[in-house]
Amino acid sequence: MRERAVSGHPDSTGRTPGATLPSVTEREGSTNASTSRPAPPSSCDASARCDDTAASLGDYRAAFHTASLPMAVLNRDGLVLAANPALGELVGSDPDDLVAATAADLTDLGADPRVWAAYREVLYGRSDRLRSTRRVKRSDGSSVWVEVTVEAVAEGPLGGAERVLLSLADISDRHDLLARLRHLQMHDPVTRLPNRTLFFERLTAALEAAAFERSGTGRIGLCYLDLDGFKAVNDTLGHRVGDRLLSAVAQRLTGCAEHTGERGPGRAGHLVARLGGDEFALLVEDSTGTDQLAELAQSVLDALQRPFDLAGQRLSVSASIGVVERTASGTTATGLMQAADTTLYWAKEDGKARWTLFDPERNAHRMTRQALSSTLRPAVDRGEFTLEYQPLVGLGDGRAQGVEALVRWRHPQFGVLSPNRFIALAEENGAIVELGRWVLERACYQARAWQLAHPGGEPLFVSVNVAVRQVWDSDLVADVAGILAETGLPPQLLQLELTESAVMGSAGRPLQALQALSDMGVRIAIDDFGTGYSNLAYLSRLPVSVLKLDGSFVHGFRSQEHPNPADEMIVEALVALAHRLGLTVTAECVESAEQAERLRRIGCDTGQGWLYSRPVAPDLVEALLDAGRACS
Picture 1 (tube, helix red, strand yellow):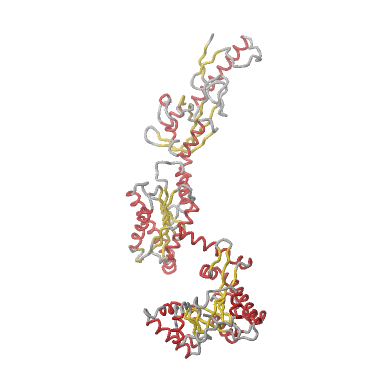
Picture 2 (cartoon, rainbow, N blue to C red; picture 1 turned 90 degrees about the horizontal axis):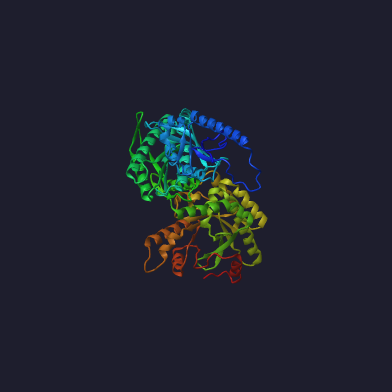
């Protein structure tokens, strides 16, 4: 029996033509074939084939050692079995010294958890190839950028264990050029900070890394800040001074990030980026909790409070900061930024020059508001709104003189919603115009129906709330005139209520509209009087016929044992003033007979509140009319 040590090397496709490195033993005549395998060739044919194979293997081995591409053959444990001289030259070591070395250490494949996971997949035979750009350290301490390719090599026909081929391509020059170009692309030219693109790239990478790493805290934090009043700097001093201010702010933010990062238990320093305009972000990887982010945010506020000296200008600036800190697992870059943006808005809303921590409950409320706002207009078309009516009762005789129409939203998800849940939203997004027109039309139809059902009695007037945006964004006068004509309701049976802040100071179109409505015969009432501007001089100029005193004044009438003399004196003075001007007065939030009696003695004309009735459906108002309109 004749044994021969042979060695081979993978060809250009990554597959072995007949053997693997290092040496393996081939036993002539050995076979694993079944008994049906054809008879072996003659000794002459076998000898010729062996000579050809040996020559080919020698060629491959020579090619492996003379190749300019650095290469090595690994086993399934990731250990080097053979390395060519080009690899030794690249890393600055003798090729023989690389045998039995760990390939991941040579090529830095273990530094990145994701690359390491993909590399092991190739070693275990579950993946065919890995390609990654890595920084390889040389024996003299220098480093070189290479493109690492790891490819599985199948077992050759000459037997032997499976191997893995490692090859490295020097891309240092290309990498340096790309790095310079990337730096220009990923950094803000004004502040030299990372820009929005690089920030989101780092944020996404940090969130993904948290899923692999187990050594960190597994948390992430973000301070999202906006300079208060920066637009005024650009508008008054010019964009050049504005850019200098942004650059100076960036330097102070960087100092804050470096200082808190060095003292914290997490990574040294934090990423500071300019996201655009006067918006900046500080990203804290492996954060330790909200206290760390709160400390960072406060240090930023303190740093920005110091004046800036720029080109002879001494400027002061403040910032509003939204702070978010949470577990990285399950967090997306988009979700984190949405939370930070929302929290920044809260900081602005709360008064600026402060930091605000993300509050899940407050955010849930905001999300509910957003959901309601987005469905307001379709809800009108779907008929989800309904009206209830609360009596307005004469304090002298206790009889209902009119009713106030109060809108309710029968939301399919949130149930019945009172006006304070959605009217402000409707005013913000403009849906109040369509909704207000619907309320006005339904209330007039209902008032006319009551009038027709009780022709012999004194008809009830209906009072409808009108938002100031309805006056500006629609032709309110034309709407009212059209609805009155369509329903047949006399104008004197319609009262329109506007808040004090909307009426006081009215000029131009709003004042003209109110005057036209008054000339038409419609009554105008000022709602919540006494809580807004209370510019009494306007009362003599506006076409107002009714004052509705805010319920806060009536609260002082609750108890005879503990009266509030100031409230009583104010109400008495307002009632006397209104009567001198020819106006009637309605008191809101009347809850007890004692309050009603004291208001009556003062001279208040009508009352409205739970003493008489809660807001009720139209059929209950019908029952009130059938009973003679007495309320008690």
